[in-house]
Length: 251
Image 1 (cartoon, rainbow, N blue to C red):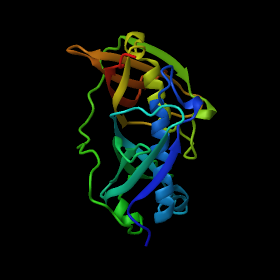
Image 2 (spheres, helix red, strand yellow):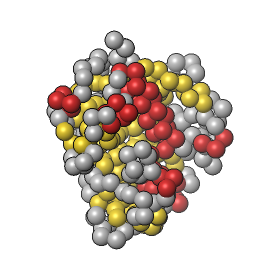
Image 3 (tube, rainbow, N blue to C red):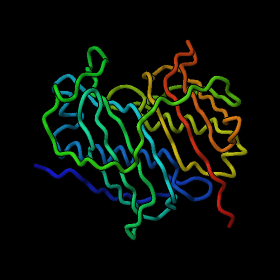
Image 4 (tube, rainbow, N blue to C red):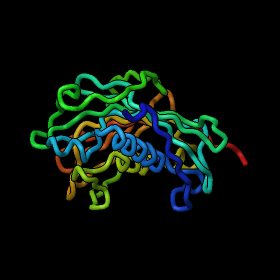
């Protein structure tokens, strides 16, 4: 039986950094995704295994916190493990470590197993073989429903491109974060960095769709932003996000 924990090492490349030379948040999400995929392959419950059963994994919730942003040329180790596997959801958590082994971030995710024909979730324990769990939370998030953004202060429309799709033939989860960050007001985006990201996925976006990314700060906290990703045609809500920002350190 393979172990309940996996470590993967990633380097921060030039094309993955922002204007301040720090890794972009969607890139961190790709690290989490790749580490989780590698571990699922080891455990025999990867997408390729589920597809033989007419099933696939879909991400339902994600919360990511970064205490320190890696810079270009630095190495990051992502440590991941499955925490629970019961009912309709499986929780997988992550730690991010720098080259010295110091923790620089943590994340928790909730996954559902989707029936490819009905596009509805199924009970995980009824469909998957048992695999080892590590009942330790890296980030103790109960995944309460994120608040809906009622009125946006900034918004933009974007097409769904082929490059946005994953093997499930819908938009990959990392793209939603990129869409949300594009709508952040320049006053925040240019002077702050996002230190916490929360995402709740609600519906699929497909090739040919046009989405609207909406954003507004909380009335009593300008550094906490609510986001809404919706279908531009019918207004259907696809994703809710909340980001927390802190001012950039002065050079």
